[in-house]
Length: 465
Ligand SMILES: Nc1ncnc2c1ncn2[C@@H]1O[C@H](COP(=O)(O)OP(=O)(O)OP(=O)(O)O)[C@@H](O)[C@H]1O
Ligand SMILES: [Mg+2]
Image (cartoon, rainbow, N blue to C red; front, top):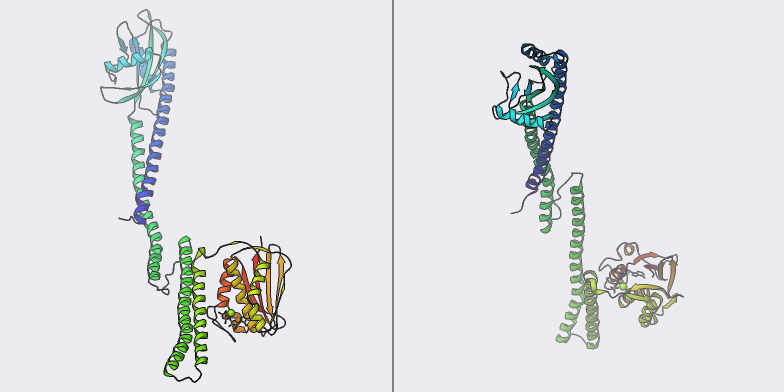
């Protein structure tokens, strides 16, 4: 089953957006957690340093520690300079086999945690996190050693231990994570809505184009779908309409061609069958004349069919041309030779005025045919002279063929290259269509006009090599 654009947008881009949001929120969460942990540890260390200061100043010089005063100092010091952390304070010392806590009443430590703590202290660690099995919480812990104090006439090492649970940080990061997830859900939902809307706005004109293409395939060229998206789809629709116009013109020209061809074929056929029937019925006194007409009309028919086949091959077969380097001067000379019989019969003088060799890429036979068509037209319409000259212009060469006849009518100039167009003195009306097609296939151009003497002018332009 084909997936439509809406599904594609939703299935491909939305997971991408949500994935990106997920990664960024996880990274942000980790960064916030690391930052908060660092901050907590710093605050604990600062506070522990203050407490150590108070203890050292107040009882550091005592000969012997008074237990009650010691406890009192510890309690007071803990109340000083609170940075907002819900911290707990312990001052511990280590006897031969035991660790003695200062405030065991509300201590959060169990014996296992105490052992873990002393292990860390022995390793010289000052800040760390420990999991406490007693309450299943994790603790941030800061340990600062105090100078040795005198207790029971012995110098003993004490440590200030300040700690707080990771609960607040975890709560905060969990809240941020929940907010992030909520934002992700909202953004995901919004992107689905936008995605659907975007995909719809994309598919709507595409469906219109599809419908238009379906109608075109059924030769319905007229029901245009207006698309005003202002983007590439509108450009595509304009190209489609352009193509439709071309198709429409082509379709019409094919119809015209068929009508004209059948009309042109019908005329000689009617004449042939008419004369043949007349001969059979013995209505002609001069049978020779009737047979001549049948032969002439058959030849005309043959020429017409050959021209139609040639023209259709020109327009449809790409491999029809065999290009090679040819000398245009020699090529036109050959064309002039081929129409010599015709020109001599009409006493028309053809003057060829090309001196230098002109090299072009061409299919010699076809291009000769093109020039024969022009020359035979000129011979038919000329009074007595046809001039062929050349004008070189950088890499272009213009062949100018002019006659001294009556020139083109306005109608000729407008329709000369149309299939089956024939004016005064015309024959089948395919000659100029064929010539133009041949010249265009050589990358050349043909233009027509009337010269200052009123005769016809043909200018054929090629790129030289
Ligand atoms: N040199 C010319 N002087 C005046 N009119 C011309 C000249 N060449 C062509 N025409 C006009 O242009 C029309 C079309 O020419 P085109 O060569 O296509 O057809 P055709 O000569 O009538 O028939 P075909 O060449 O197929 O035998 C001619 O019928 C003629 O009226
Ligand atoms: Mg002709």
